[in-house]
Length: 272
Image (cartoon, rainbow, N blue to C red):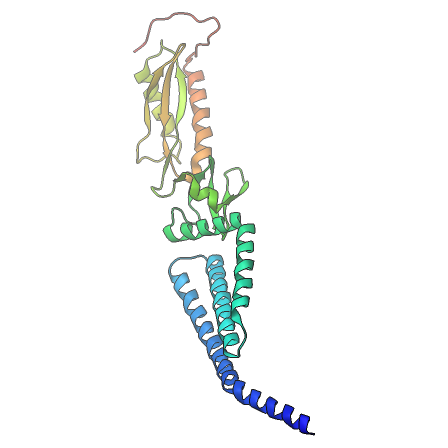
């Protein structure tokens, strides 16, 4: 009975000793969870107002929520007498291991944050990245989704987007098509230029402002090389490109404009 009384006294003393800390820890736990919930809601509203996509906002809020709850758990554990140093060490080691394993993904995530923050492009913009041209469908946490004119879906890691040159064709609102067309030295360039401009005026999707440009690019071995540069909306690029090429081919045929080739080359008088 004496030993039992001694144990009872020890238990009562231990309860009395830890009870204030335990009560305080419980209070801090519930208050902390309430504060974290309010902070998460405030952060989500702020991110949405800042232009972040729902995917990125949700991810950032979740990460912040988890981080704050981990800090709260460590604080509460310390209040009840738990040695938090070892616990923190385990978390740090686990975080380092996860960070090394997800190094590429974290790089893409950081790049995604930069894209959403500085906005080099946005959804529905026509861009060119790593020689890939298309329309931005979505900006995700790790990738940018682009649809090409050929109905291909490109999943481009955000890290590759940030590390290269981004060409945004939607910033100005139009894009210039550049076509190189051979023209015999015997033909009159001013006449052919007028004929090509007339054909371009028949294509409704070619913009009048800026005006199409036609000029001599170089003097080739067998022909002049002229450049035809009409302006179009980015979404009409390939349609107009092929239409212009087809019309120039028909124009050459209708006006009997002959293109010289290396084989059987003949010297002719140079036209105007």
